[in-house]
Image 1: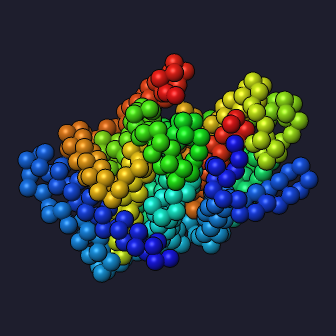
Image 2 (image 1 turned 120 degrees about the vertical axis):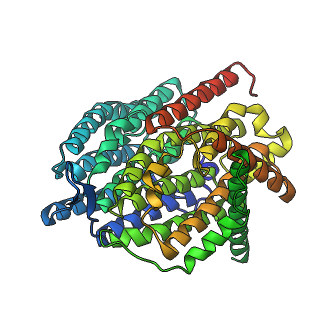
Image 3 (image 1 turned 180 degrees about the vertical axis):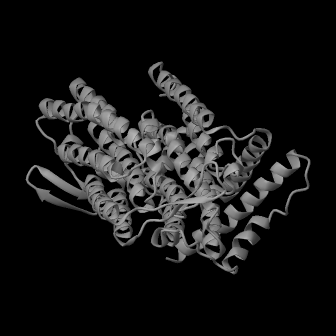
Amino acid sequence: MDFVTLGGNLLGTIPLGDIVLYVTPFNLFLFAVLLGFTLLIALSKPETQVEATMHNLNNTEVKVGPKEFKQRRFLSIICGIASAGAMITGDLFNFTLFMALVGILNIGIVSAVKQTTVLNSAFNYGLIAMMCSLPLFGGAAIILAATGTLSLAVLSQMPASPMVVFGAVLMLIGILGESGVAPFFASKAEMFRTAGSPFIVIIHLSSLFIIVRAVEILLLVLW
Amino acid sequence: MAEILIQVIIAFLAGSLLLGLHRKVMARVQKRPGPPIVQHLIHSLKFFFKETAIPKTVSKVFYIGIVFILALVWIVGVIVGPVAHDSLLILFGVYAVYKIVEHNSGSSSGSPYGKLSCVRAVLSAATELPLFAAIVFVYLVTGTMNIGQIITYQSVHGPLVFSIPLAALMFFMLIITKSPYSPFAITKDKALISGFETEHFGFLRGFMLFSESIAWYVMLWVFLTIFFGPLNAVGYLIGMIAITFVTGFINATTPILSPNHSVMTQITIGAICFFGTILMIFTGVVA
């Protein structure tokens, strides 16, 4: 299946040897939204989270400290750029690399938090992400072994052999685990309870957009 | 440009009136008189002229920016859908941004109600998988993601609702989820006041209601177009009113589910429809 059928008219390509970066309205939309959100993250200061104090009639204010703020903002911006890269790449291996980087950064963004439940959730998500990196990279490797290329432009013109289908299924499992969507979302949901709205939004955004892009990539490879 | 403007205005007006009708249907089912059908439209316009207050706990850039992103993203939805008949995948992307807006407008306020709504928005991401599956099944049957070509396919082979009814049901689940007072509307549970909208006042709330109306119109339009196409203006009008009636009746007679039950129900229905459609494809029921 070609890009035009999936993502709309081809707006342009950037040929780099076997690897061709391509831009369709679909890719451009995802790329622009991610860059826009990354810019907003760079400009934002975190909110003050107000919580009820236990056994008392007061409110507790949870704030992000200055050092924590700098570290989390830096990781969030890198996460935004990595996710934007995953939206525009025309290479299967680059996509898996960006995906793995996003998984690591998602844990990094909440690693400086001092709430035990949040850290536990990040730890559980980290375990799943680590386990799913094997099918993610393994799937891409099997597709490379079966077809001799990682270029999506070339893969989209090839018929899918059983080995390619097997590789694509492995990749799908890897993507689901790495991005922490259903059925793995339960491990990730607690990570969002912490303060620092501009930083945790990129965790959710990167996961969702990678799934959206993965749909296009898997359809390109399989049909 | 003029067509985009006209379509956005149509989407806003039609969406507002349909949401007003939705409230009216719910009220009548519950034996209440209910507000007039134009009430949602009047509410939306009224908020633009009310005083806007910004809580001191907010993350200001996102708190204000997110409502504009919400409006912008559904205007993109109108351009991709009713105006350009472009790729379904872009609309999938639009819906993903909508989920992010739900998430961030809740968390950026610093309010505990918004925060809980934000965490529930992450949990309710379970609706994305049936949506994704429905879109893929449409693609498998028609061989295209382009809405214009899907309409052409249906004009030759008949509406897709007859060939992949379970995929249509999966999409309809999404519409129920996003309808007001839905049993799956865990992000706007009344225990959370108004959920992620709780701390947005004045013209910011006006933008949210404006976007809600457009979102309702676009979702109904996409559903009718890819499963009941090709339709003329009267067909769309009848279809949208019918779906609004059905969702209003369902929402009036069902209580809101707890987050865990909501997610499990959605996943269960999604899984049954997914495997049912695969079975239909492999047994040759779907050509």
